Length: 267
Image (cartoon, one colour):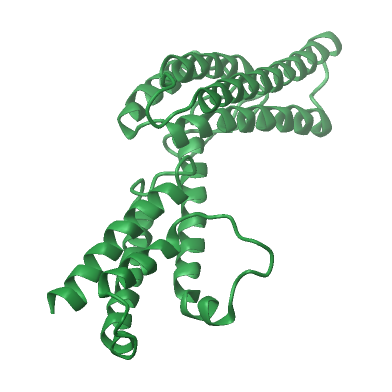
């Protein structure tokens, strides 16, 4: 009982856990939301169930194979690895179809959770100036907490992360500055001519602001993927500080970030 069920199940569980952590390292938080935790546990349960079923029903026909090896081999199905073209076998693909589907669902869930988290982290930031403020604060936060090369982090990886932080900050700053220029030009035209802002001008300004906010969210991706959940409170503090100084144009109708209602402004 112990050698044919408990030990293979335990070995499979441990290997699957490590494999999932390696597979999704830098791609999201496996325990970030309830849905992600549920899928994470389902993958562990599926691999463990396959290992136990193999030991109980298939292993008696291949007695030379130790049961614990079955658990390790089944758990290794979730470990990331390079695949050669046409290297998969139909039998293997059929046996691991359920695990592959769960891994795909977990990957999509982590992507969705990250997008939702980044959108929540930009709530209340309503103009280009506050986006520059937030992006600069995020850059400082990320660089200050960038780990030194050592155990688990090579010099190349650390340098790559630093370059990525700098690159995304520059892109976010440029997008925010373009949004500021567009809104400033629209306001200057309104004051000089005394006419109402045209729908085309409003759409252009709002599109540029949306692009700037998206560029800031791409910078936040790095905080989500490589940061710790304990740092979320600090990031929300940076967001709230930028939002406090936010002042959207008086011609823009913006939804309230907290209540979901619209705050209408007159021209």
